[in-house]
Image 1 (cartoon, rainbow, N blue to C red):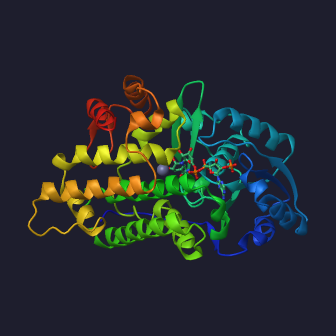
Image 2 (tube, helix red, strand yellow):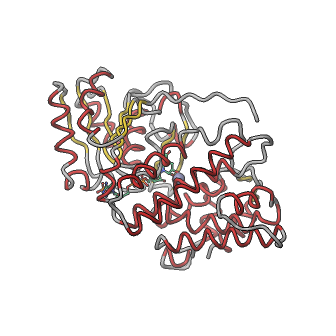
Image 3 (cartoon, rainbow, N blue to C red):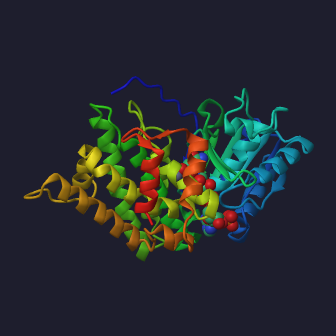
Amino acid sequence: MENFTFWSPTEFVFGRDTESRTGELASRCGAKKVMLLFGGGSAERSGLLPRIRTSLKEQGIDYVDFGGIRPNPTADKVYEGIEVARRENVDFLLAVGGGSVIDTAKAIALGAPTDVDFWKFYNGEAMPQTAMPVGVVLTIPAAGSEGSGNSVITNEKTLQKISVRYPMLLRPKFAVMNPELTMTLPAEQTAYGIVDMLCHIYERYFSNTPATELVDGYSEAIMRDVMDQAMTLRYQPDNYDARADVMWAGTLAHNGICGVGKTEDWASHRLEHEISAIYDVPHGAGLAVIVPAWMKFCAKRNPDKLWKFAINVMAVDPTGHDTEEIISEGISRLEDFYHDLGLTTSMRELVGTEPDIDAMVKSLERNMGKVLGNYVPLSMEDCREIYHMAL
Ligand code: NZQ
Ligand code: ZN
């Protein structure tokens, strides 16, 4: 195991009716005027936003609405939010939604207090020194942004989707997590979220760092449980216990505990971000396409962890089979799992046209340089091959 620092200051408030405590939590953070960020309408329709507004009012906290944030959130919306935050003199950002709303709040939190163009904090031209405080009411377990120091924003002008990690600035102050709020999710959104949180664990599990048995062990337990609960939710979408496990798993998958003491990979995420940047598909749907192709590519070059994954997570019985067969069966079971969730593992089918692999590889190199990932360091030609394998 490598040396590590793990700092997770977020207060997680989990369970039924916890959203009624939002005002109290914001008040404890010193909020006087809140910017209430939300998406395209699901939180209004479900009655959640009115309850949050009431909870703020009860604490004497003023607020200004900032809605209409769309999935794969854009830089334009962040610029608009920065203007509103300044004009309205808000002192706290409250994100009600999923990764897209939370990541927009985080981007505004970086951009509002400074004259530096916020995008420079994403494209690497500048380092942020400060950020406004962000709180979260989570409505979809997926991106893990409620517990992460990351934010992912798409710049439509440059067709770049860039992820940044500033944990000391961007970890939310609190995250309200009521599993009941996720029962209004369409089945496909639940599925995308499950694929995403699992991939957040793969990015850390597939590592060459030796002696990580404890971290690997609990990572495997989370992955197995998420896959089991995913099947329960296919047929019982209102099952509270399954919703609760999946919601907490989404946080554990990405708050850092599954990566402590290890060199992480992140190639699958970078490969996927190029797909959703160009074709605006859901991030989880893109990952269902990329992950099996990435695993097949890595199988011959670095089989050890894939072998362990096949046996310990995908429950492949190794008796009488060689390493190649075991890994191949593990990947095939993972593909079946994605199909059972109703997702495709074909990039062509996902984007509905012949994918422009040249454009994706070119953009990947511009964003990430010449080598991607650590489990198997990938050249740009390797990435091209993986995109072809994912077709
Ligand atoms: O916009 P509304 O109407 O609210 O609908 C949303 C949206 O269409 C809907 N939804 C959310 N909660 C709902 C609901 N519908 C019914 N009932 C509810 N309770 O779900 C749709 C997707 O929402 P979104 O926020 O986009 O989902 P997700 O949490 O998957 O976030 C995806 C974004 O996060 C980024 C992704 O790249 C993508 O841009 N990521 C962020 C990360 C981070 N900050 O740490 C890490 C991830 O790897 C990921 O890249
Ligand atoms: Zn992700």
